[in-house]
Amino acid sequence: MKKRMLTLSLVLVMILGTTIISNAETAIDTRISSTDAYRVEQGSTITLTATTSITGDNEGQVTVQFVSDSWTGATEQSSPAVGALPTGIGGSGGSWSGSYTGTALFDATVKNPGFYEVTYQIEVRKQRGASSNYDEWEDADEVDVEVYEVVVPVYVEPMAAPAVAAKILEFNGIGARYGSGRTGGNFIADVAAAMGPQTLFNGVPKEMTVETGGVPTVVSNPTYRQEVLEFLNDHVRMTETLEMPTEEFLLGL
Image 1 (cartoon, rainbow, N blue to C red):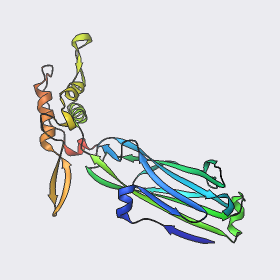
Image 2: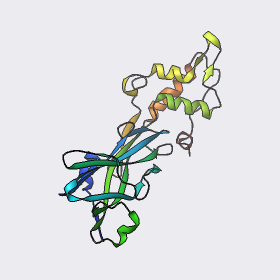
Image 3: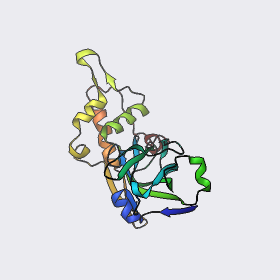
């Protein structure tokens, strides 16, 4: 039995979010997609979906089965069953295709702004012949155990004004709703309505770049948070003087 590890260079994978390996009998393409193009706001989560597409040549008589998969930098939610054949197998003209799907949760509730790497790794067995008996493969002569890996960057954005407002209100023990009926409203909704394009608030961006050890680093803009705090304190329906939450509270630590 042969075991091979196949990866693309980090630079290429970071750009494409995919790894493609092929030979005369099968081609395997693993890609990771996300619910929001690899971007998530502080305090939120996104689901990452890894799809491994497989195509084969019927004349090569190669059977593929799932062995295992794993995530680094995200928490696995679902995975194919051990020994499973690719789902949705079909084809014509002497070829076939199918796929495996695994999902994971990227949690940004306690992460600082910036880029984070997520790695997905899938291990499959490829046997020459049409046998689908997984237990018999250990003794087979022509079996390849191959590992495919893909890495993508996930960007954690600083909290936008509505999320900052929610944290400020929670820290000060103030509910989002004020008044009742037609004369009532919602502080967070009012902040959202006052937010400008690209999440600017009073013309101030939510993120800024600072030098950390000579390396540019994206951080939350404290002036942005202060603008939200002042908006709430100046609100005609605010009856308390609010204070800015601590950094630990804002990050949910």
